Image (tube, rainbow, N blue to C red; front, side, top):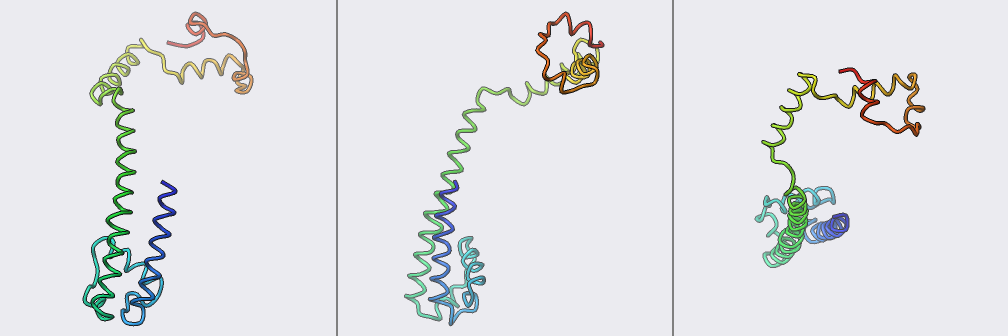
Length: 159
């Protein structure tokens, strides 16, 4: 995507400078580079003033406008759309085996009910119990080589 952005911005800037050279003396929207950048952006989105552009000549305006639309809109913006759609396809393929929203909601409700009935222990409770066992020293707790077994957790974790 970064390579596309470099190409897109380079072509966009070149077309804008070209517009300043072609239209700059006759059309107020292309008189300066910043105005031309704005006018070209608007033209890319479909908002342009064709009547003022034809002040320099119908064929000159047509050649610049046609080349701008073909390069910027038809080719580069469609390439961007293709890149985004490919990324969407990859993400969709990766998420194919993921739980559905309904399954996630059911799992959350089940966990909440188990927590309420004290059938499930939260990870925060386990962390707090291990922290207390280490005497409140987090570095000591994290660097410990002690193996933790379920029986040990049953002894130190409340609930």
